[in-house]
Image (tube, rainbow, N blue to C red; front, side):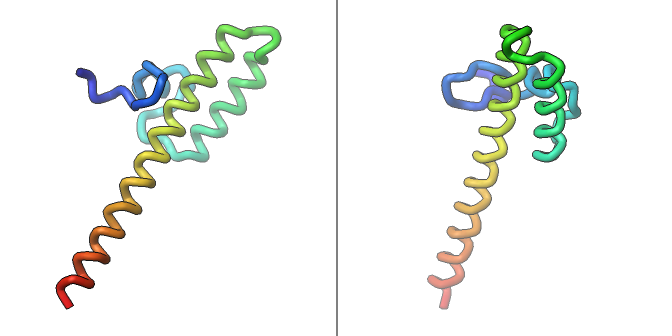
Length: 88
């Protein structure tokens, strides 16, 4: 099993998503959005449906990854607070 895959219906790998969007691994959400916007203009869905679909899937893959990381951080913060409260 490849751990580079991020759940959901998408089978796109994160590394592939970064490559499609022409950005470095670990790019910020702002950089991801900017790359998506620029490529979406260049490969408009009506003129380049296949290319646009790939770009959109790459963007969604990285967006889901980011949301998952934020959820995990919030969960860890809650667990830390609960542990502190139990120690009192």
